[in-house]
Image (cartoon, rainbow, N blue to C red):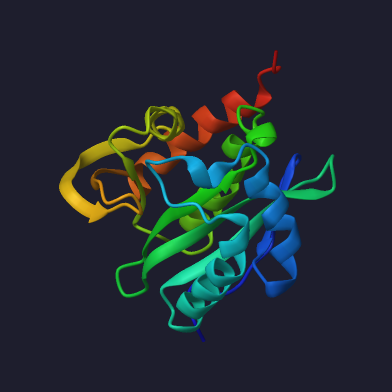
Length: 198
């Protein structure tokens, strides 16, 4: 059996469910909300590229290196984003949470915090992970701030790590949370989610 096994995770605001080809139209709507594919510092598929992106993610799943999901806003009853356990290292019980993007209307709403909480809790408490990574562009301040808000620590920066669609080279910031840190990070995230949103 492929590790980690498929799972659906549910919280108060979101449900995280395994990606399928049936999510195509919903994900097209997600990327159109804010024209996400135009963000130069990340790789988000255009509406025309969603089918290929889904097939790529499902192919990585078959090879055991990714478990891709969609994120459903429970109140709205619709898909508002995508995320994955990726760069899966079953032998060392490590995953990266990445290839994550949200509709612009779902950003800064608390959806990301709960989504990351559910994925981290599952990784540390059910999959017995020893570490969870996050990676983002050095210049993606919004993403870096969100990762740091989770309680992840910067491990380092991979210089000229990979080439973006526009030809620019990305410096990749690598963050992680390790198992010993999870109880503190968990308490911090629970506190954040309990705060009233203004």
